[in-house]
Amino acid sequence: MVRYQLGDAAAVEELVQRLSPRLMRFFAATEPPGEREDLFQDCWIRVHRSRHTYRAGEPLLPWIFAIARHTRLDAYRRRRRRESRELAVDVLPEVASAVPEQSGGENFDRLLEKLPEGQREVIVMLKVTGMSLEDVARATSSTVGAVKQKAHRAYSTLRSVLEKEGHA
Amino acid sequence: MAAEERAVCRSVDAEFDCLADPGAPLSAAAQQHMATCARCRLLYGHADAPPAATPAVSMAAVEATRRTLLTELSPVRPIRSAAATTALLGLVFVSLAIPLIAMSRIGGFRVMRWWQMLPMSALFAVCAILLCLSVSWQMAPGRLQRISGKSLRTVLAVAFVAGAVVLFPWQLQGEFVRSGVRCLLEGSAMALPAMALFVLLLRRGAPPEPGMLGSTMGTLGGLLGVTVLQFTCPLQQTLHLALWHGGILLIAALAGAAIGPYSTRAGAMRP
Image 1 (cartoon, each protein chain N blue to C red):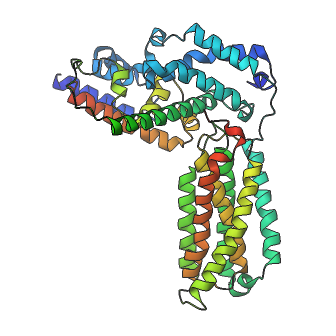
Image 2: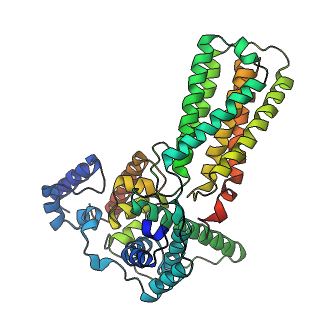
Image 3: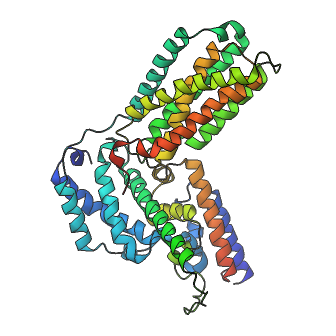
């Protein structure tokens, strides 16, 4: 990252190569398929614009994921705004889902969809991208205590979801 | 699910709840149970999923990203460390507060007793240090915030009002509204330019939450105004302090939150 700040092209290539899979994993766990690549590219552009804010010696992953998280939040807000406008113009009658209900808890991603945004994000960072509590706190501009609390709340929600689905 | 198995699941839940780090691995017994229990594997075993589950990044996306970054690549100077930023903000705070107190009438010094002056000075000093720290944590992504900006502002407001209630008399003297409005205007006139100076110092930052950073900077500016007024205002009464002096903190925090999103360099974090 320090070489990147100095303008070293090889460092850019190495960084993109090494971190892209982790970033894509993060976006894949939180975003619909059609938007992942756009967010991925937007995130790298933000990383590039903010590269002067990285300090040598500080952990890199939380810095990158803080930017990724913000990219995702902005996209989420844009999507919500767009959806609310669309609903205001054209209210469609509710149609019963044609997709048959899946049997309980077949995959973790589907289970995560049941969580509120903040809790889902924390679980994705902890379990999917494998970050530590402190790293997640850094990435979410939060405190370690708040992250711990969100994770435990998320697990309580997941347990009750599984219970309703007949897993316990 | 059998009652026995359910009981084991509950014990795994309990073990997980006791972990200091929810990302840490569970005990060997729990791992053994997870091998046979779909529910617990689903809840706690995701980190051990094979890397094949990771979605592939399309080569086109990586290539496009790489090309964009390389065309705009130039050397940049890193921003100051959190400690250096804190020290700088603290220095600016002190170098503004001392001359402003010296230039104003020092009615507050004459009216306050030592047992009022000492706790209030300590309160302002601690709050100023914490706000400077919070601002420097918030100005760049990925910095650990040991206290959240929101909690800090709440604690500051509560501590200030509590100090005013406990240490100062309730009786009203003089013209409550006229003198109050004068203090509010004077304090705001000190807070807002100070905030503008803080914004100038932090213009190279890329805060993940610019509104929150702006609000914290505003509170720091407001605290400067309140500190100066504490030593210069002759009306040292609970209601006057809590309402009119405390109002400066509120006005400055709101003004900061409004300008926060426009305060950093070319919107580095904006799309």
